[in-house]
Length: 478
Ligand code: ARG
Image (cartoon, rainbow, N blue to C red; front, side, top):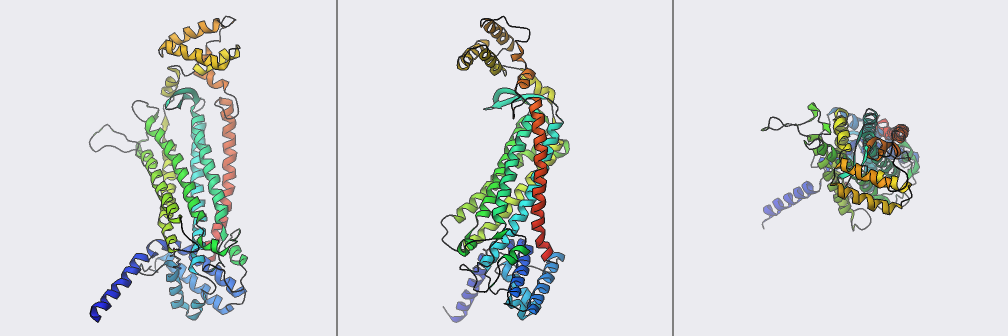
């Protein structure tokens, strides 16, 4: 190789290195968190006498200037810069000279990026909690509007026992509530500051680590510098909490898709929120629930990417960790959009209560009630179960024949059947009997709804605390 082609090869090697390793195209999303973290770090350097008050002033002014230029679109990100952190530091030094070059004292990009990610995740969790609360509210108000409408309850997608439609809808409220609680737990583990961990062993400068943590409204500091720069549990936990949430949405959406089919006709798809066919003029399609259902797969894909990149990583920081960002951002975007779309969709969705009720009356959905009623006459439940199973086989699914066989059976157990003794066939009597806490009786469901409303209030104050912490970032940007 002559020296010219050696130089050309060298140039293209460094180009390849930059283009393969640069993260600016995606980590630029963290600019607010990065700059706020730097403002807090600079202040901690100045407070412990590592940099002068003048340097702090120059750095803070410079960083805030960059923030305002990014916000107004005047600052263009250079995708060939290695990463956001280098990019902003370089811009700072161009603007304020030597003071800019002091900023990175006692800090590494390893604790810096860990901080940025924590600040991003806590803010993004708050956004998802806000969307989840909106959907919870939509569920409760939809449930409240259904009165005591009855529908078939299913197990194995086969008719099981009648339930209230409001009870069915509210079941998703509590799944979402556990999602909110999981996000809140994850939030607490996320909201601690790794600053001071340095590259891996802790900074040698005499800084007070709680100072930047307090400025950023983080609840504490990490305990071990090696752990601090390698820990992405909060990334994986957030991705898991969101994936499970998305899976809950996918189940709800699957039901809406099934219920909208001509065979079920339990729901009428909202006109403005449904798709059509380019060929079949009569079609109205459940596009929103179908896509929400599919997007759960995308969220799980992101989670798997994150877990897989963490697997077998040795201590402490490894560049692999840069790969967590695109997946995590995508999981957050995807789940937030899904929640928002589904909230709109559910609000507009109409239930065909007559059709649902009719379906709950057909067949032998109250067979359990008959077995219960034999059990109250002293027949051991296991035996009663066998008897009713035999009757239902004999009836071949014919409700009229089943009733006759059942009344004969009741008569054979002592007293003659009274006037109310065939209410085991009645869906309404069946739900009325289920007054246990968490059961489907109208009374129990009303209490459940009250608990749901109180739970929403609790979630709102949780969200307010999260938002209050997160607002420290924008406050530090000036
Ligand atoms: N862009 C990197 C990341 O996202 C920042 C930390 C780089 N640190 C290093 N020593 N190369 O993880």
